[in-house]
Length: 217
Image (cartoon, rainbow, N blue to C red; front, top):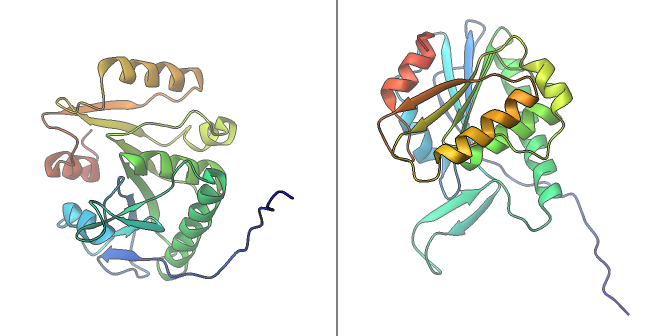
């Protein structure tokens, strides 16, 4: 007799790191999603200095953790793997919905900026496509839009919101071929991003972050 596969939905503890204070006066909330093998408490350090009286930065953390090397030492997190990927996507979409529910309660007048770095880029795109949340701007950094999502609703959401594709010119993962394929796919979906290249590798850049916050790009 073949083994049966069953699933249970269980409560668990998720982690969220924050710069700034959510309040009635908050006008901008950045939800920033880390890349594969990163932890939110370190990832959010790249955004220090962007917070102010009207701006708050929130860094959720992938629900699955693992040792980066061997069986001890440094730990990283991931948003999903290929194993039961659809359920893992569903889980993190529900998690990020709760994050935005928290924001909506504590900072009801805030607009959302979504930033996804590397693996986090696909994460924020899938969340935006699968949830009722809308964003004022979308920043895809050193990553790409996934092809396996429903673009009908996503395209409508992004019709009046700027979309940025940010990448380091020395990033070996973002080749010119991959970039052009991404642009062709997005143009077919009527999404026309602004390209933001910078001198650097697979990394964040404080100068570019400051320009994005100030609306200079």
